[in-house]
Length: 166
Image (cartoon, rainbow, N blue to C red; front, side, top):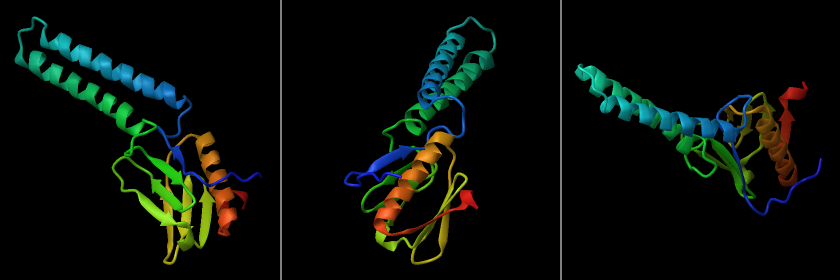
């Protein structure tokens, strides 16, 4: 396995989870659905209807749904969003964020004693006990992430146990 230079940090976005479509397709479909629901909200608002719920309630529901799709496309699926689930691997350590509303964790390479790689799970033993980080992503992204961590851990002299080969 060839090792990569670790002079710069590499960010690997986890994306929309374990899906068969590409990340750009999912992001574009979320933008499309968000815009579609916003248009439907406007149509219900300016439509000649007799009920208050039809005019205000339905347009509010469509607006809220459209906002959620746009939020997901812009915040969760963005390549540059700091809120998107991602791993940042640098020469100093690992930054792990597994969910939009979860806090990111930074672990310095000097503190890491052992790394365990499993199915959509990474275990890191530092000075304390083993911490497990489960995540959802595409199969290809998970393989790329594990190969990169394995290569850099080998450069740093950190023990790596691949639980998939047992």
